[in-house]
Length: 444
Image (cartoon, rainbow, N blue to C red):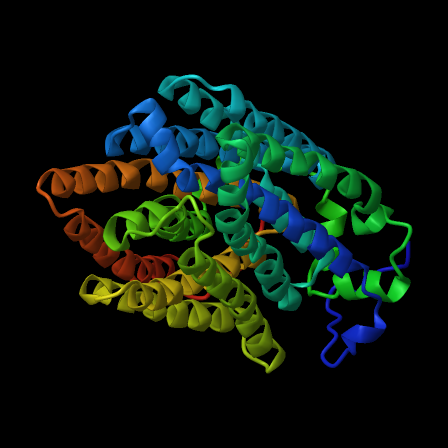
């Protein structure tokens, strides 16, 4: 492998197009994995009206099923984060997608509400490996100034999965029934796995990477020291003693539940408030999730662009995140929407802002922590977000059931939208207080 540049070497004006482009193959793999990840978790929201009739679900029943997934996802993130740092991204991702694809397909044989809770637990445990492995892969294949954009691209797979699902699932439901919807989408993960095993490896072991691309990937200050220490294992419990860990923790805890609300409750919201027929392809949902694709990629690009313009990394990230936080505020006015397309516009802006926020906050983990700890930190932050999503559905289920029984469930959704509009500004303030300049962590 080519010799590294000295630790203090920087590429201020490198023409990145001349370095080789294999790292974008890696981004494409991560993009499709994330698409499949969200396709598999999204299906239950689209099939909720059908399943609720067959299994006699209340809003609380559905919230408990969502919570079962969330609890398993939280635990899985904590376990997979540290596990992937120990065994590597290639094997870690392989194990993750095998588990989640199997449990996605097992939904088809469930015969009870309790059974759905069980398979959602298995799905959550398996899907938890996606983001720790993906963020660590980006940190392995990109310098800091390029990570946010790369993260935004692969993170947009979440939106594509959410776009494909409202088109694909109703068609399968109409032709073959709800069981086949779970079987077909679950099987896609095994197709992706073939490409992952063929095309992925870390840069130091990859045969197709050029010397120029290898040097570009490792062009950050301190990369030589990181490589010298990459074999040293991270003491997971020690990470909780660091302020930067808690900054990422609270940033995810307060904002991840909002995105999950958009995934699991938007289809029922449009159905109950605007009488949207979820047994047919749903154009409003397609519009919402398509918009979030632009948010993810554009949001990821913004901070990378500011860094290339000479901004300090911490200033570029925080400024971008503050802009995205303000973009979520207008969703509080969704309660005044008089037709579905007004609501779609407001929700689309907030959902796109979330994905822009998500692409950027993920990158702060690799900004502040060395590569050998990135997966662990993403796992901890992801666990925090999932804990928030365990608690948030309790509130959502209670509020919606209360106003549903009172004869106006729309009021319940309006209250939830107000919470959504405030969460990001609160998260930004806490992160700024804990890590004003996002100083890199020096691990022993």
